[in-house]
Length: 140
Length: 369
Image 1 (cartoon, helix red, strand yellow):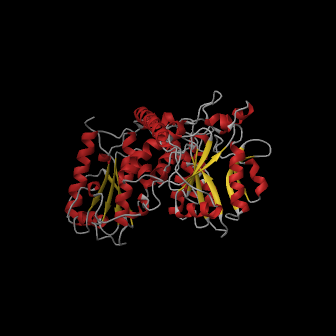
Image 2 (image 1 turned 60 degrees about the horizontal axis):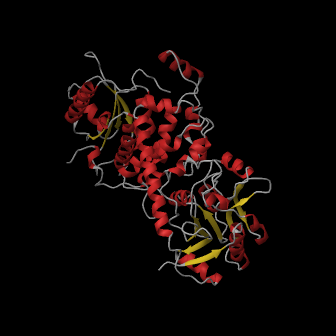
Image 3 (image 1 turned 30 degrees about the vertical axis):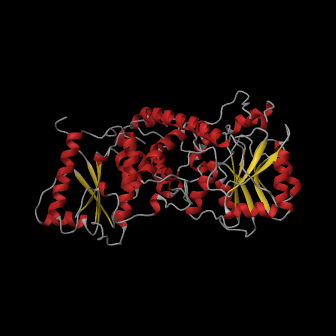
């Protein structure tokens, strides 16, 4: 499937990774259009339901971007996000959605170039991996 | 040093002996009431909050049935405490669920002394009624007479026949002709003191018999969960397994550790407008109704799998006979292991999603500054 383009749903923290995406844009860095960004107030606001829903709707990958440890605008939201991602990974991988499809990364507001790199990397990995087993199945 | 008190009984006198024991607790004002499984006036056995000694004649705590996980009943009784001393008689799965509910501050054991009982398993609710109709008795069950019925699937693979984290324990494993009351905590021993019970060593064969039972059950568990993981290793297989789901949500009503006061799946979030359904149908060409069955089960797993005690009430509650217990147990084993947690193991351990640390789980992002 050479023309396969993965869809990545990205939940980005307003204070860090979303700002980094903005910085990437204003710095005229280009990153793959595969990523669909949802702006959150904090990575700790990403309810596991959002991630599950994205996969059930056919997303090939889900990306969560938060502040580096110690930098959370709300003190500890990113630590909660990390526990939830660990939990989700354990659940989803038992049904064929491996951890390579669910990424949590710390990207600070100043790291526009890192945002570009990490989205590039995830897009490449997902292309190698092929479509999500749920894509086109449209589970309800 | 173990502290046991022996309650001997003649054949046919098990419940009488137990009723005599509980009567002493009420008559000597150790407790204002005992919550214990008891025969109901018409039929069946249910947890019953008994405050008058003569009503204790109906007790039947070892009856092989758990109509619902009684951790929820203790939560109901103590969420807003009465301040009056109560003894509750629970099985291992109920005690373990109760331990989790206490951590969630949905139950409170300040006025409660917990008596655990040895558990050889339970029948499904309907099977138990039939078992009784056919003349089956609790004593018969304890000596291995199942009258052709099988214990619930969750019990067949339960490695916890003995209740831990209890104040006292009613033991039947290790002696076929007596119940041994084991006094464990300070609170438990204080009860023994008030009763003036003499205590001593327990039945000789107990440890060996418990060990053998745990071994059998653990082997069964490993076999069953391995087979289950293989059979539901992808979403299509999972969907096939859950194909009978009609979104009745009985499994979460029955679940003792499904802790939300209001389940999100019955809120307006999931009360879609007609145009939303039509939109999905247009996009997909076909939309299974009701929607969100898989979404519901996966979300429930994120909520309760770290607290799952494997009591199997989810399977028992399913009107379409979906085997939910092995699904939830298989996932729960992995999620609990990830956080080095075991639901019900200890009242002190923090629940995985109720805590976090700055220097943990570095492998999730793989990033180090």
